[in-house]
Amino acid sequence: MSTVDSGVWAAPGRVNLIGEHTDYCDGFVLPFALPHRTEVIAARLDRPEWIVSSSLTGETVTFDLSEPVTGWAAYVAGIVWALRDAGYDVPGARLDISSGVPGGAGLSSSAALECAVLSALVDLGGLDLPVAQRPKLAQRAENAYVGVPCGIMDQSASTLCRAGHALFLDCRSMAVEQIPLDLVGHGLEILVIDSRAPHQLVDGEYAARRAACEKAAEILNLPALRDATLADLSRLDDPLLIRRARHVVTENDRVLATIELLRDGRIREIGPLLTASHASMRDDFEITVPEVDTAVEAAIAAGAYGARMTGGGFGGCVLALVDTDRSDDVAAAVAEAFRANGFTSPSFFSATPAPGATRLS
Image (cartoon, rainbow, N blue to C red):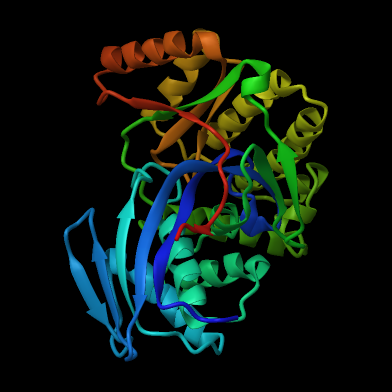
């Protein structure tokens, strides 16, 4: 690839239509990219140094990887480190970052940052890194450098999604299929409800869920819970492991059922699967909080076809499948339920499937 001296790159956040905590179990996920994205204005430097500025924090961080980088800049340093560790000659660069992806809402603001920076550095350096291989490298940056044991869904969505489609990803084979999601043509909308409940993943809860899934697979003598059936769970003695594994097994089944309905254009019929997914996250995986449970219940009571929390859990956003002409009513009902419970007022937006990482100029 030829190098470029400067440019602007962007990568989106995502919502996961269905398939939560299945990615690190070699399972199935169905995210789509949001119009909200992180932009990076990048220019090459003639030395192995990276100067990173954030419009959100007003901070500028300079590093050369001689010492560990912490805080938000660790996501940038992690990409540089992962590229170098994979044998790439990464160019020094100045990177000015701005983002429209809400942070702490479970919409993958971190993956958007990683994938925008990765796209910029690959082009600045003329690095031979095929697009299909970029999610794995970005995931490694977050796992090994930042210390978040995430699966590969977020980076895949931020890199590989197409406008008007959800991304069916097999997290074992990395096979992808673009699934049409024509909401407008069916008079539908996916209403995203930001619960404003802080979304925290590096506090050990995410890691504990992943460890439980891996332990259950080990006890069952399976490569991953992707290979388990409900009948297999009778071989587990620990009630907690049974619940965790049951979520993954049933969630994989729900993803496959959702895809079949979408292929047939039966979008409204996925509603009950979304709601069942939320119940499983609430009862078996235990990753919801009162704000998101309230949002789901209020949305369904107000006429949503289905609703579920999206993202890693413990806060963040809920998505609700609604008729476009009912969206305002559903939002009002959720807002009133939050007021009645004394919660911080939620915010709302309509999610439209958008494209993945790209160079803008």
